[in-house]
Amino acid sequence: MTDELLSFEPATGELLWRGAVSDVDREVEIARHAWPAWAAQPVTYRTEALRRFADRVKAEAEALADLIARETGKPLWEARTEVESVANKVDISIRAYAERTPNRRIEGAMGLRNAVRHKPHGLLAVLGPYNFPAHLPNGHIVPALLAGNSVVFKPSEKTPAVGAKLVELFHAAGIPAEVLRVVIGGPETGQA
Image (spheres, rainbow, N blue to C red):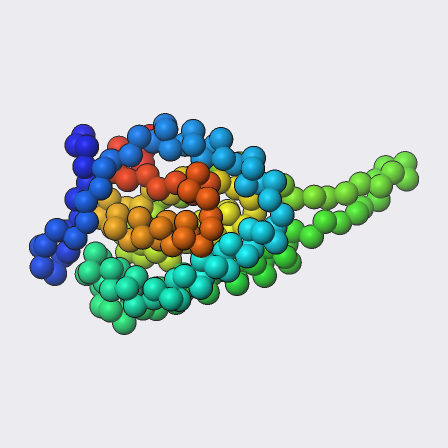
């Protein structure tokens, strides 16, 4: 295993990105430690942070689409539709969360009242594919963060630049760096 991961542009063979291979155990520990504070934030706080993320994606849409196209080799028009889907996922997730997780009271045995409250699970791992390197992992990251979970995201070793950029946009929007961690590496990193 090397200490560095390189990404080359398929169309030109040029070096596009380089980054250090992550220490998975360390990244997991950081995210696990950050989870309780993130889970304690009101859902309105998490919602607003994710809306800021969608705004950041829209503001940097062309640059993100260009990066996706360059790193995957897909046409720019297809990369643009992927970026649009990344931004749209936020509102879709917010609506779905509101519809599926209301607090409710139910009648219990012997006349007792019970309440159903939804709580975060903790730490989630998201493994990203190379073919939709922003949209598909985003479809798991956004709902997980909205629900109050912390996330360790490992982008495909074929598209680490897109994964790193996606996480950078989340952090710029106010998602704490300790709550959303990016893990760079090859298949052995994902297996860890």
